Length: 407
Image (cartoon, rainbow, N blue to C red):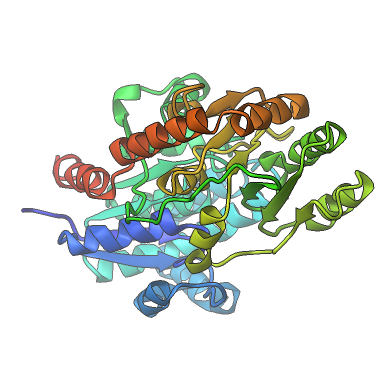
């Protein structure tokens, strides 16, 4: 099997919330792909599983304390071809990026690309892949421009909603593009007038381990679970308002809202203001190794994703797949790629976004019909196994690298 020497460019690796990227790297290496990981930032040390800690050492990292390396990379390429470097600076560095965070990430990625390009030549890299369409893809794109090494990238969610100002250029110049949802392909076709033949659907691979089935007792107090980063696109404020509806209707329940993030204080205050203090618990960030216990204790998993005012949104949240692998009934909103997994009344309940009353009604529907709830959860588990089998999906990725890179 002729497999290209491949570089993966990421912001962080491994990252606890990016188990799907970690699993892809592990499985591709096991399949024989010569793959080396490079990160634009330094090291994350908290909340890593033992397996992630074991893989953490085999990574080349940058980060702000390596600014000298980045500048040395610029100087190296300046000496080789200053006209081309000046043109790159004019084309990339001074364009209008979208938002402060993405601007900082993209500009740092641009500088890092010069050092990475040199390292890619030294490592005899034959293909560059960025698992995100934002800063990592910018670094891969610029490094490809410098070296002529083909590159690709994956589109997921926040990295293209809203798109940065270079997304269409990156898509144009990439050897191919991977998308983790059908919804993203249609979005790119509209946003960039892209040839969809260049964009390949590669669903994430989710570890299909044999989890103990959640008992889903559906006895009061009914155990509701939500989990994820506390950011605007998750829509947790609408879930809390739905809990207020349930409380007012006399439903005996308890919500566990696991996670952390910028909106933690706001959500806790909202729960208190709604009089839900004793009905909602906030355990904070839960490590990957401890997540299974939360699912096994749940009767219903709720994912109230929304399209944020900025345009940001989820793709297909991995936590939905994890809930279904534990046979936990799911309620989710019809946002982005979620309907590709949750078919209303078949694999879960699909509801409109930003509608607390709809969340409450869906919860009552599952509470009042445990048999139907379990049937949907079992159908959902079967669909996860069909669509997100890591062996099948990562084999497809390997075939892309083998065939498309060799052209």
